[in-house]
Image 1 (tube, helix red, strand yellow):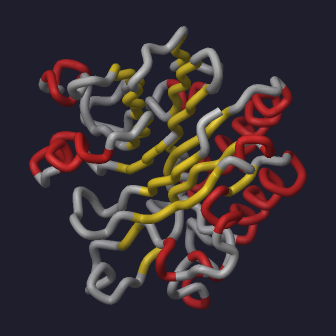
Image 2 (cartoon, one colour):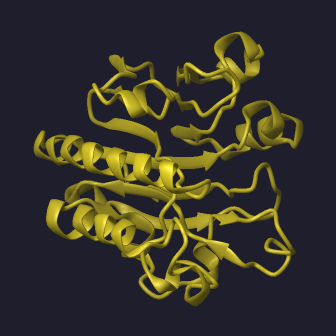
Length: 258
């Protein structure tokens, strides 16, 4: 089983940069998308459902903003786009598809980098979604949550950790939230579980400022997290950096079939 997650920074922009030329050769079972910046009427047929896949989406109320999706080879039994958290529901930041053996979630957690008001919004979302994720884990089903969490967990997860300790995305409170998610609640950060010591290879986002991409001044803020049992089936992971479709890079993880 192969799962890919990518923040597209605009599905139409990613398409122009060759995402849908690259996509078919990946032969992924699931591809989770974040930051569509589009609505249904903005998508062409390929974007809606690449050949051999079902397309599932949740759109923001605001035009040209946020939005998440999941491409799946198998048709879902049901799709969830509203979870009773207006901050996520209204901005199209959550979608879940349920199949017989597994559930896949694509999530796009807010950034707080634009100012204090948005940072408060981010903390509000983190508090609310934690309760949801606790309940999900107790179901006892195999679940993969993919997405842009907009938080780097440890110093190993970004290049300039010293200079970013007071910046959104690496604040102590945000990092503590991830620690609670992984240690207390019990979700597993698959990439870090497979590769405890890898640093630069794991970066998934680079600022457009300066020469961040060229110098690999990156952050690892995109994740695939799973329940404990499924984590045992994760075999290898990589971040695809040969071509650029976005300011993020695809995180690709292979799991044993079950």
